[in-house]
Length: 113
Image (cartoon, rainbow, N blue to C red):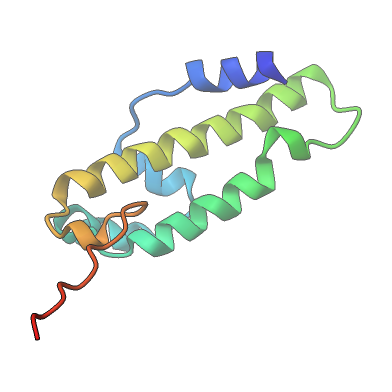
């Protein structure tokens, strides 16, 4: 498992947004809106999770040939690299910190009484 994990991390690469959308099987019609405002980010994230669950290396059927196992792992690596490119672009264009994933919104300021 550690060897497989090391290979997955080494496989990270730059992916064009067009290729990322294709790898995650999301509509190409979303691309212009996403480039401008980050529109559909949550839908893209859901699609990424579906792809990862479908082709995760731990979900490989037993007895796959080496070539089939490598292809299965490559699909997962492609999905991870694709979402990494999408998330990097989203963080770059997103000016509203509350919209960023994994960041809690600031609690509302208490009014003095």
